[in-house]
Amino acid sequence: MVKITYVKSHLPRKLQRMVATNRRVIEAEQRKIKEGGLKDFNATVRTWNDPPKFRVRNIKQGFEITTNSKIYRWVDEGTRAHKIPKSPRLTTWVGGKYTPKTQPGLKRFTSRKGGLANSRYVTTEQVIHPGTEAREFSSRIRDKWRARMQDQIRAALQRAARAEGL
Image 1: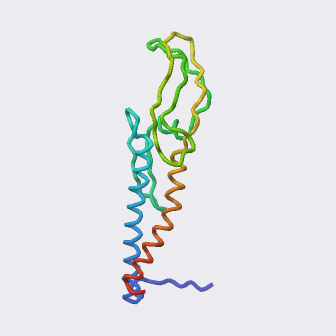
Image 2: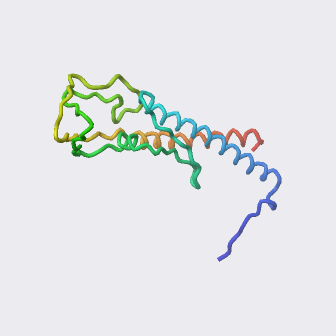
Image 3: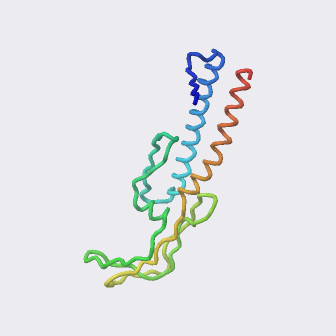
């Protein structure tokens, strides 16, 4: 088997310039995509009283946006039905229809007025929480930006090639 390796210094100057330009163009587009993804994640928690902090971390394949918030994970991925035991310090609320501020499956990350209607406070031995329907924010944001990323980078590389006269 024959292996051919191209060393940067052996490339023609015009091609070296093009490689450097392409690298800068790709990095610039990735920065724009990171900012857009972070903006979308922040939009999902815009109405929260104590919104989680999101971090952008560079990884080998690109970048990832993460948070350490358990509550965000529960809302994003949903929860199964579970029992909540009585706490000696707390009174439990029961009743009324709950209206979440966000809805699963929507394309836009909009919020609306949510909360409880006709609720009352009682003391109970335990509450059986019905579970939370997954909002799937992270997978929808990932899919949105993954589709856009390829198109944006391709268009930026074409603009750079035209500017270089290729």
